[in-house]
Length: 451
Image 1 (spheres, rainbow, N blue to C red):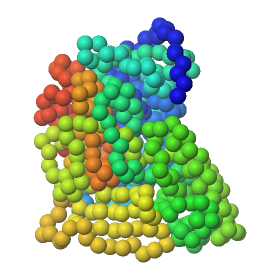
Image 2: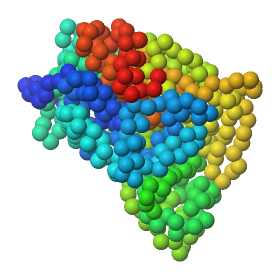
Image 3: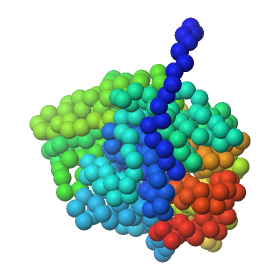
Image 4: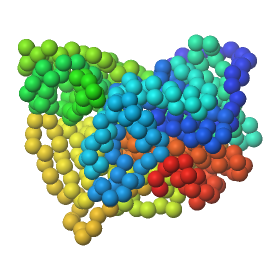
């Protein structure tokens, strides 16, 4: 590789804050909101043109249940519930049964963009859209991260803060700081969603999407996949997730570029398959995502790695900051379909056009856990500056645990925890790793979390 030396230059400090959040997914925004609601001056940096991440720019318009598996206890609340309640008042949400394992809420992703803007404005956040965390090494002063560089239409600038939250999805900040990170041996494949008008006109064909892709996909170079979708509430538009992009690492620029192009190609191929099966149908492509639906890339090393055994046994932790009941959901790289593993010991292998195969991953027991927990420790990078924490899917988990906890309702809670932890660190002048966990949990509950 040829090297060109970038000339040294002075970089203006464009903003100073108590807390800087890199990444404006719902996870990142919820971190910023919780910190701001506790009185911190917060700046948030997002590379796209809106908040919401996978829920908006990737068009994944479903959040999972806020209840445990038998519907007897609400285990998730906070900003996830608040946002759904706000959208409900606009007729932009459909609520599903609280024990539904596949969906708790279906929402309008475009309405969500506007609602998140309003939340950010109410909290007084300093917002930088179309702004990318930039390449130069972050500024370290006295062992603490003092500033990061960002780049946008106005050029390159520095943001100074007292605490930093890495919500980039790929641990970009933590990686640039030289903290230990890793990639799973099995990176779950990405999906490009699409939104269609006139979906009803497909009739029976709409219910056979997976079967048709299985039958005709090879001729269109579509790998064995798994398909699902939702109508947009109060609309005849339908969001379909039926593509599968194998073998890409979302933290690699070339891979990500290939994945975006391949995802759109597969969407068009699926349209061709559906039109051939239902030539009289009047349906059309309404929208494509501005980013892939990414499930996994880089993870941090932390003081504790959450394991599949922890999740599937419902292990309790003294430092729990998030809870979930979504099943283990493994999207395979090496075979069609997905494997779903449930807390009651059952398992399903699902592939399009074939009846699901049911089995048990463990023998039947008299009682089963109804939810699992995520400990605070999994958000703390090993040997990193003591004023940096992560929020989101880059937390330290093994592949089975990741397959369950990665969904948005779970990761949203890690954002809220990171935001509250940031303020508690500022108030007590303590490193993030030394915070009093009982105090952190109490502050989360006081702010609306269900712990």
